[in-house]
Image (cartoon, rainbow, N blue to C red; front, side):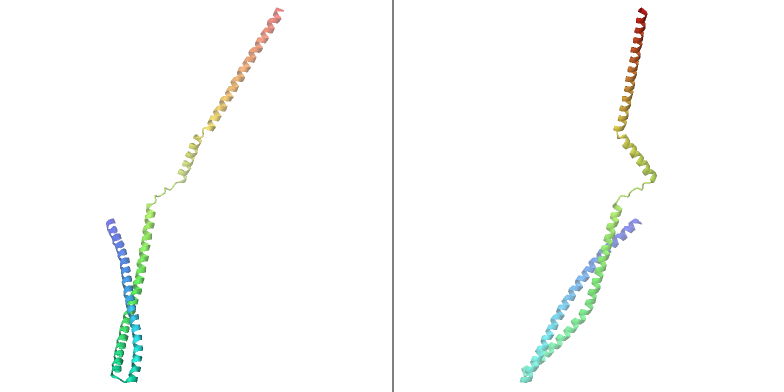
Length: 204
């Protein structure tokens, strides 16, 4: 089943590219043919206009001279004018449907471009979305446990506070010991003094 889907996707992408390429080709070819016919029509219209002027001149010349040469010239100009008008009519009839074809080709090209751009954007967005690693959701309990563990680690990393407490405790113990020693020494001194006084009073 996945292989069939891949084949369908491959066929779709190929068809999309072919559609865009064909639309560009048709639009270019139709536009080229239309321009060619329009140039021919423009040239024929200019020729027709020129023949009209020549016909008027030939008529005036024939009316003045009534010669055989003037008559032949008039007939030749008339025939050329008829042909030129007929050619212009054919060209106009050919230009009309070609303009419609050009319009349709342009519309098809715009659709093909829009489709290609839309699919391209969708593919980029999908690749970007799939390429990102998914973030794991943290539960409240796990988050609280992690905070507690972080605080414990931070407390362990602080060497200053426990050391100060130990030093203060040692100092207090040393003070107590010194006070005891002093008290004992004073008591011994007092006992000796009392004993000396007693001995002296007995001798006397």
